[in-house]
Image 1 (cartoon, rainbow, N blue to C red):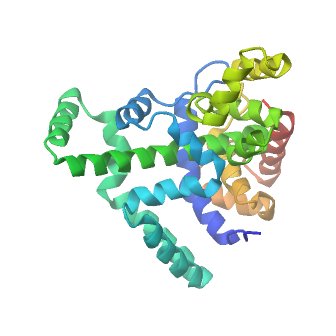
Image 2 (cartoon, rainbow, N blue to C red):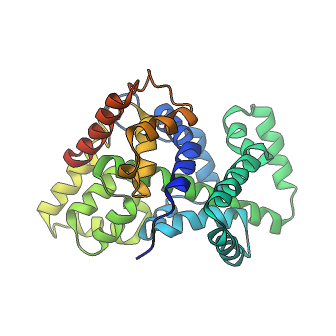
Length: 301
């Protein structure tokens, strides 16, 4: 069994990722009825890259999601580079791991690549046209490399985001639900497509199963699938997106219960989550929110 990452590393990653993921959930979920919709700029970039819905294949195994990110940073020699990186990281004392990972995050945030998404959203039409002309002027091998890098990056973003939405809603990640569905678990099939409907078009098993169901093979199963397709993923119950994302990130590392209320409040402060806006002014309120998070997982959305 794979060992869990250190509690201190889980804390660092929660601080670095919670506010960003929470902002995506807050800004780009649908305004009504609990539907989640990625920003049109993301959808257009994903379409233009040629990735389509193929990113859903990453749900078959959780390491594939991180692999997409690593390969986008280390094209060609990704596996070799990552294994060396991982071996070096594992060998470090815990305090040095934290310092090293914190440095990596800070380096990324100060690098030009960190402006990638800002440019997607804020570029003018003239700037986009100029960028398109520059891209078209590149040699074919550089174009292909750029396409692959963008595809891998968006595969990571989509798969990571929806994986944790599933954990919030159902108490299981898509990387758990999809393999269960492929083993014949009909409930897992329905839960998975409720979170990310692109699975029905991008994953061969789901696509073929859905096509067979529409021929009348299993009417009850088809009714269940139809019901979940029509059912909004969150129905407005994620009242505090950034806080819920923080819970989900810790939960994804199987560390949520390992932190006291006081420790989570400290994480929230470091992640710049407003205590008042998230109704976590003190430890008592924080515990209430953690209980609410677990309750919503049990009853579903």
